[in-house]
Image (cartoon, rainbow, N blue to C red; front, side, top):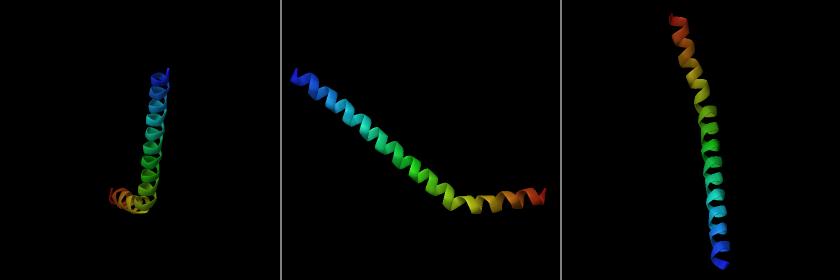
Length: 51
């Protein structure tokens, strides 16, 4: 009985860790888009204008 409860708690902990990692990846992706967005727009506009 105690072993079953211990295993359930570990699975829940693993899921929480995956959730935190996913949230961290999302924050980093949003920050990268915010920082690189204007620069990429300039690059793409230069390409479009040269065509």
